[in-house]
Length: 447
Ligand SMILES: [Zn+2]
Image (cartoon, rainbow, N blue to C red):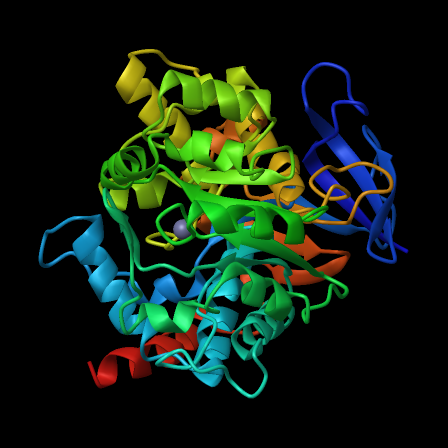
């Protein structure tokens, strides 16, 4: 048994009435699970002392690991989401399983430094250039699984069906040369390949519909059926052009199309959900579909601002993702959701700090299929994130409002399933900056 003694801890509301923050909390851990939570006690000899505020582990509910290679490479030419996508495709074209393992390992290690204990990897880079399968048709997915294990975090592999090259008012487009790597041909072949993947400790296999532009409506039920009982994610309404094409071709909004083909529900997460009509908000909420906000990406790509407070009030749980990793700071993602709400509505406090912590922790883990994580309570997975209260950014903050001030750099210790992955701001793999440099440099050398 290991005991952690926390200056302050964000306890399950069921443990503490009133404020979620308690002082002088001893958390006992055995075999990766929390076995005891004792607020208001003195440390015992041998306890591991954690500084600042200890939060449950953060779930990064939407990631494309390879987009990390684009950070600091896309700001010189202006453009739109669609011109950014050309850069992204150029990087995608240079990855193989070995390069992908190195890049994802470093990317996930950077996430661990930011307090992430579980990542949802929305994975569509399946095959070799040109589209022919690797000897192991899941070689790229296995690289991601290995990368998360090396970085010490859990992974939900949201294997994405991607079979069409785009959507216009007249119908779907053929795949281009880069997109050929994303496709299994059709949803049935996609499901056959995904069926070869297996859950294992720290790994859950989920599914994704890339978007209504990449999966024709008649193939949506195939994906939904294959995902039964597993997390199912979908990019929804990131760009107005996609919505306009969907309405022109199908006579339905993307949300209605997904709903009519069995994609929505409490195991489903709609990513972005930016340009929605009132009817779409109602449909997402009524079906209990979660929404994943990725505000740093949505700002970087000039996507727009989603109506997340309205979605939450309609019944959609909110979770958060760093998506293309323009920054890897989940605390910043939480804060940006509230910041964007304030800018659009002229009101403060659209999301209370406790709601943002819920999105970072329990709701994010739920969206990735880990219902036993995201709270500091007996029986839950022992994921602990200690955030310092004595840095230049956080000194003087009330612990209950720390999420509105702290940054990834303030994360001191990260424990995942009872294993210390980050101690005193250092990852067990060592210098993560060096790992990222070594993984990213080859992808631009021949560009
Ligand atoms: Zn995405």
